[in-house]
Length: 413
Ligand SMILES: [Zn+2]
Image 1 (cartoon, rainbow, N blue to C red):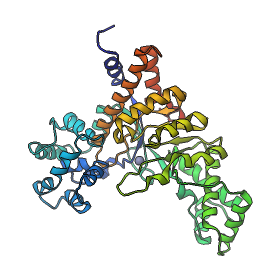
Image 2: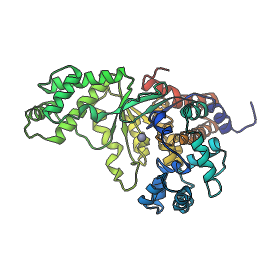
Image 3: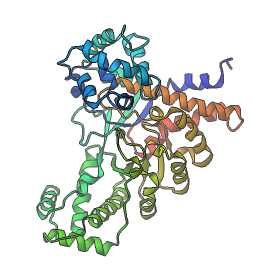
Image 4: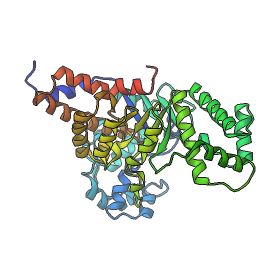
């Protein structure tokens, strides 16, 4: 036994592990390296929301990402606002990334040019491997880019938008989906078969789940859904809201049949000026109750409704709780929520990390470090308080970072 504090020992152990990254928007590496990058690229994906919140105009932010303008001019636009947001959770992954990858302790007047040169020099084939595999030790990233990646499949495992499977709202669109699936549609039952075939085809191509959002949804009676679908097929007027909810409910049952996980965006929205109350996790309760065989992965701890999300996780055996994005949105709230969830929810139902980035892949590293720190803080407290041994704490951490996502998504690792 060394004399290091418990938290440091847990962290040192966890940093050796392979992990599953439970949510990204990473496209194929070729998309990232075919575009120019510089230090200001690091503000994309979330930190720019804090910059705009601090007073930067959207137009000036867009200028900072325009590589036809001189770097110094663009840096001058963002610099005063960077000083105002440099201590937020969204900003810390930038600082951790420039230290790890670009040899600079800070992003400031003295370093932005050097960081920009080094980033561009590293923007070459193998970037994903160097960042995600070598620095992060990530085995797989569950990614959402609205389609199945055409490369890097050994690293990128897709989820697809749920609504795309049930989007047909004209007889022609239904017929087209039916043709593609090799069937004919004269009723809702026929359409359900078409959707099932399309889900099977997606799964055969590596898709492991569907993504939806926690907007309010109803569970309409089957006869009413069938009737609305029939009217739509005849090109007559129908209740669009009822049909949309009805088809979603059909899809949630099919997801259970086909062993696809349903991931759900809950809580805060990813840009400024959005009414995030529309995505309250409590909106999911009618669907959770109606579809007990379906596995739901509730994202982002439902932030800021982490306690309600914990209560949902406690009440419903078909719910998992996913901390993707959460460690950078609100690091201290995440530590607090994770600690409270340990009291309430089987530890096998929690997924510990998902970077939630697209272009600035370097920030996945910073986010992962923050996740490991938060997890170590919570579990070290539990060890100190006598709730678990250090070995048990490591077992829990390993479940959050590897076993639980592997089991929930049935990942082939
Ligand atoms: Zn996301």
